[in-house]
Image (cartoon, rainbow, N blue to C red):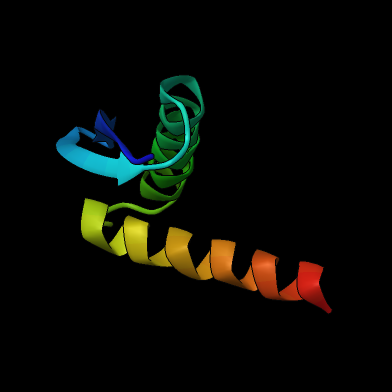
Length: 68
């Protein structure tokens, strides 16, 4: 059964449908916000979108390496 969750990632609120529980989804959103913030703070002039793309690439790389 899918649940609808209201989440906030790096200041952007959205609704997310997931089979996971509220606590788990909020934990993921908080970790993603932390990673985006870290990237944003590491270089001047990096937008939230750019930081989110770099974060997505980092997570994808991590996922691929774990599967190898």
